Image (cartoon, rainbow, N blue to C red; front, side, top):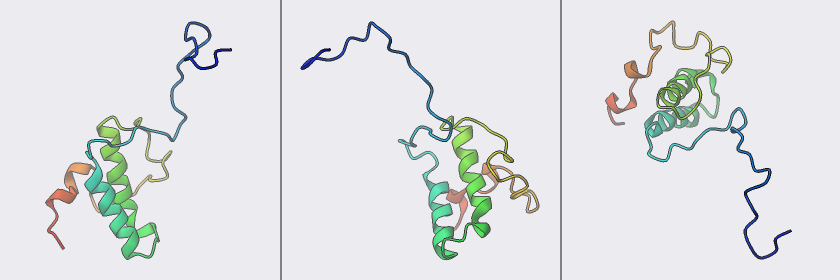
Length: 102
């Protein structure tokens, strides 16, 4: 036991990947506008996520495309078929930066 000094890293220390569902924070704000659009939609719809699911998908696509989370299938994320009817299946087509300011 090492009281008062750092533990020795020479024995038994191993690095493990993060648990599924935990991912790096967006320190540089790369997807902040997508997150803000989603949160604004939630506020407007009294926290009902159903009308905001396409924005959720856009936000997650942004995170996956920038390596902030592991790419996964939409059905595993509960978003299979969301946005495909309206034709907005990618982040580039629905960029919050291109929207007019309210």
